[in-house]
Amino acid sequence: MDKLLKNIGLVVLFFLFVSGILVLYNAPAQKYEDISLSQLVGQINEGAVKEIIIEGNELKIELNNGEKEKTSKEMESSLGESLDNYGVDKEKLKGVKVEVKKESSAAVWAGLILPFLLPFILIAGFIWFMMRQAQRGNTQALSFGMSRARMTDPKDKEKKTTFKDVAGAKEAKEELLEVVEFLKHPKKFLAVGAKIPKGVLLLGPPGTGKTLMAKAVAGEAEVPFFNISGSEFVEMFVGVGASRVRDLFKKAKKNAPAIV
View: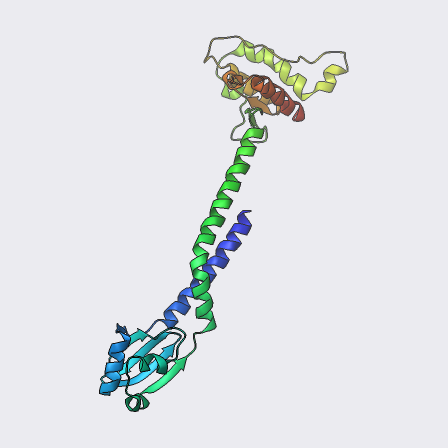
């Protein structure tokens, strides 16, 4: 989706760049002064007009003194008919150079497309924004009942914690070394009929290092460690907490052996 949007943006920018060049190319180098058709007829009758350039209904006039003016003729009528209606002197008109210029097809297309291009870009951008919001909403809805546990990869040396990182608690470390051995060499214990414990209960007030000790056990055994706060299982919607518990153990089983 992002790649498609990028390609569309490049095409639009290229089109705008080309259109800008065409507009600059077709822009007059000198500013033309607006006059009425009757004023043009008066100047022709006075012999002050050197050349008239016809571009569609627009007339660009160059006077003998070098000044440039512009006006518009009547629609669906020739220049001669429009000037006749204002009483032009036909003999004087014969002394004026008349040139007919056709508008370039590129300029015509730019004039037709540019007014519709900006609304199209705005509509396309709005649709893309709504689609992205809808996808994000669906993703959030699907992940609402999923566990938010953070997994510590045993291969990540920067985040890995071992017993060396835990100060004190010698007795707890000695007891937990058995769990580390169970996790490292389970077949050795299973061969003699021993049962690997499903869990270990660590007791102590908040802040005494229970989570750190569990993380150190996972680091010593080189198994993944899933860390999550109990409050994250509590939600205002019924069933969400249980769903997150199931998802947590599903992830742990997928990465077994692991410590939660």
